[in-house]
Length: 298
Image (cartoon, rainbow, N blue to C red; front, side, top):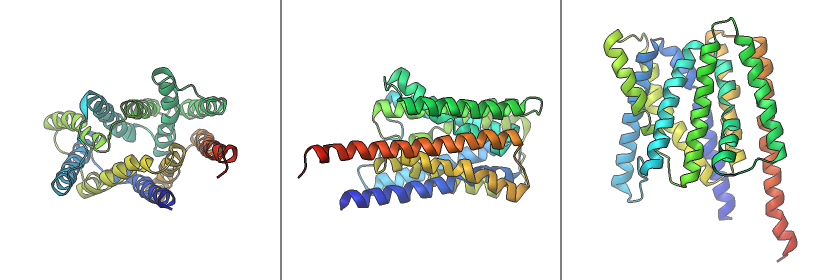
């Protein structure tokens, strides 16, 4: 009964995190400012909110996780910091659809890094899914040639890689990295502060980005980081798909930004492949759990 309750709790927590994350890009766009000013406000408010939450947690309970647990935590924070820089840069240099579709490619990077460093050899189904996703990304990037979106697509790909690297290091260490992703914003914040000091402060609607950094980022990161404690990796991956599907819809409704044909084709390949692969992994997991029960009936 407790296991069933934990599973439901995990599904709810991860769903909240996934849904909350879908409004990140629309809020960045609504703030209407220069990339460095937006990055400064987004990361600055995220850091303040994270430190306040952590301080309250530590004051109330003794089991508050470390902000940066050792050298592995420092490496994870650095990876998330680089992600913060490349992600905001990508928002300003490519379409929302291209960005979120390419970000979904982090699952391929994660599988490759796990194979290289954790010796987790991918199964045939995973290899087929990886090849299909590579095709999807190639179609999206191919459609960006000559449109001025190529640099933004490359930044999105870098974001996907750094997130996958952070996940791989986290899994290898086995440490609680719940707050590490939030503290990692120190790097992009420092870079943004330096740039803004030179070019000036430029934002027309600052409250959108302050709300994003102070509320949306802490909720989404914290929920998505805690989901894997209660539910499986494939189930968590399904909730990450919410941003891939919904963010372009919100941007289309608010800004009338229509995805290109190549973006839709490549994005559809990515979404269908991810969904099918996650469902396949769930089914395989159920079979493995059921096998001992069949072999050793109570």
